[in-house]
Amino acid sequence: MLKILMLEDDEVIAKLLVRFLSQYAQVTHLIYPLEALELLDEEKFDIIILDLTLPQLDGLEVCKLMRKVSSAKIIISSARSDINDKLFALENGADDYLPKPYDPRELYARIKILHARQSTLDDANSKFKLDTTECTISYEDKILDLTMAEYQIMQLFLENKKQAFSRSDIANSVNSHRFDSGLESINVLVGRLRKKVEPDYKRPVYIKTVRGLGYKFDE
Image (cartoon, rainbow, N blue to C red; front, side, top):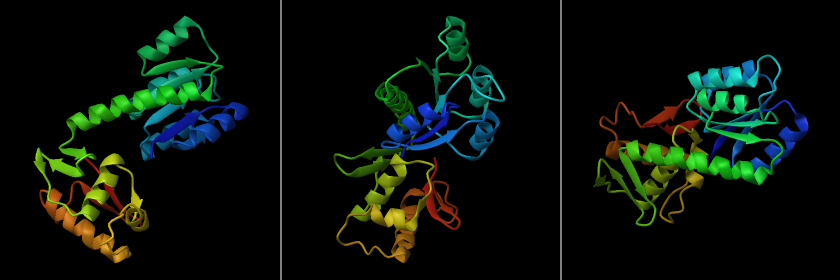
């Protein structure tokens, strides 16, 4: 699922946006820039929605700092409409600038555009290619020999790279009628997948174990 970090000190606006965007994404709302910067060191986000009028630090300075630690797309959401603010933000890491007030639907439309561009870039650089029409996955241009359950698990991983999933989450993603949804079966399936996609399945670089939770796909 799309992960959004929103830095907004107006609680009314924040509640409205969180309620709307939570239909489509996992939204984390914070008020304080220093807390947000610490979180960016620990977690990966796809989109950052950044107000400019904030406690602790000015939003333009926060934008510069965020760009140094995160590759997330940054959307400035601000009532400040001065052209100098816009130029500074766009020249120092922001990907878009949306003046307040605005309809949340416009914000989400911009989020989708930015995320689609990033996804296209990521896919172009990936060794794995997912074809949902033919239900096939290729690795270095060679189609992998996968069962339907294996394909569905790999589809989950490829569409949600770097996101950790519990074994229950993975089991719920599999619709194959031949699949035993027991959690131990997930371990067996992941082990088979590693043998098919990893250069050395004993030292996996793509399908990684997340201790105490399950697995994630990294590339």
